[in-house]
View 1 (cartoon, rainbow, N blue to C red):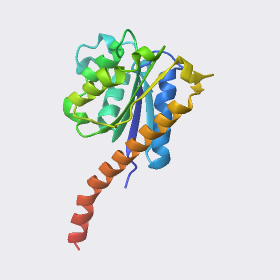
View 2: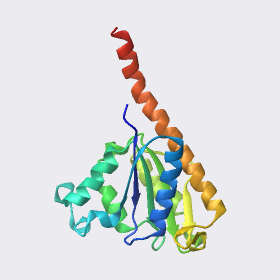
View 3: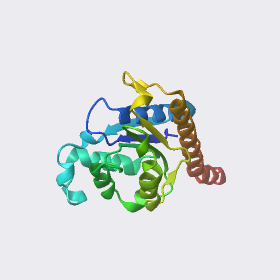
Length: 194
């Protein structure tokens, strides 16, 4: 049996970034609890053509590979910086090009970063509805971190690290259950074929 594929996606346009740090931390927590193959992408990996692609067939090869990785993943960790009270425009544009049925029932952990606490509800008021449209299975614990939660490129806040652990654990639980459910019919078929 192959390991489930966990894809992390950070919508920050620079490296290093706090958003990527948060996405990596949640993915690492999930990987501690469930053997997964982890791949992490930043929006900059899509290249400069992402914003100019008006349809999926106009995507550059790097951008197309990110969209396909997201669609083919067994679970996702998705993070975005918050600008002017919402997720980034390129983040939304990329997800506009994801096939609506591709994320149905897929476990997703949500994360966002911002300059201060006033953006904390973006996760609940913007990200969760977006993934609700896709009928993805978002984990109950979302993670929002602001500038004071980081120090020297790492997570400083114990409270945020606790939320990261909860989100990663919930994601691993859902991804593991989904993988087991996918294997169960195969096991029954193989057992009956003897």
